[in-house]
Image (tube, rainbow, N blue to C red):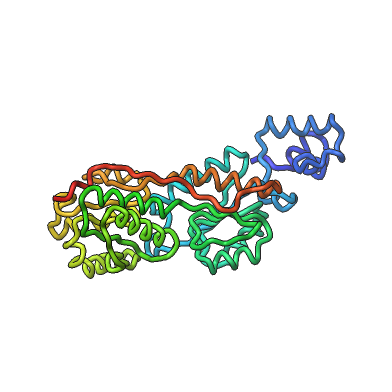
Amino acid sequence: MIRIKDIAKLCGVSTATVSNVIHGKLNKVSPEVREKIEAAIKENGYVPNQSALSLASTKSDMIGIVVTDKMGSKYVMEDPYFSRLFTFLEREIRIMGKYMLLILGHTADEVLVQANRWNLDGLILCNIHPDLMFAITAGYDKPVVTIDSLFEYDCDSIVQIRTDDYHGGYLMGEYFAKMGHKNVAMIADNDVAGDHFRWKGFQKGLSDNGVNINDKSHIIIKSANKMEHDEFERVFPILRNMTALFCASDYYALVCSQHLRNHGVRIPEDISIAGFDDILYSTLFKPELTTIHQDVEEKAKKSVQSLLKMIDKKTVKHQMLTSVRLVERESVIQAE
């Protein structure tokens, strides 16, 4: 691999002169020498060390994507939603001529060490708990965007982008009611942030259409993989008496469906089931899963665009919701 001293030798200059050209310090180099060095770099395929460039510049052109493994033993990278989100984030960052650094951090110190080591221009925090977000922003003086944050926080250096979870829940509640379902429940692994708003919207969509349910119909299960089987066994006596189930994610809809089938329950003949996210597997599942589609691509675009505007000291909107829509497939049928 060609090194900076090889370029210097080819051009008959010092390594310091080559370094000045690489780092844009062109006032120290004549136009003729600069052109000679740039030509040698191009012809020989020399690629400057990105970390060295970051340390030498006030900007690194690198964006940090931070996520924690909040799903216990289920690694976040196995979740289809996150794989889609990271794919769209990387594409948008690349289109803007920047680079993405993925940080799987469990503590603020872990995140801040990486942010400072790479001189990151900004951070995008995905599904971060409030305590961790406060700790990160307290030790980081550059722009931050949060995606699907667990709270609303008014701060000039932070943009928060969330799915319109309430409306998504409302659409599913309205749909269940119109399909004649009255004995219904929602399954989630918590009652905070997005899942809380999905539940409240679900209740409202039902009640606006003549179906009233209380908190007993909000079934919370523990989410770690090895606990899921026991959790579904615990709530199965409740689920078997429902005509339709709304799951807070497609992942839980698929897991729940498999568990019900293991008990001889037919989907949707015995129980209709629906999810939220519209992941790829929702169409591979048989019957195909009725769900709420959230625009992950739109979320990624708004996140990257907002962060780059803040880096450039431009005005941004600090609270944004992304759109949702109902996708009718085969897993929900008309109640008898």
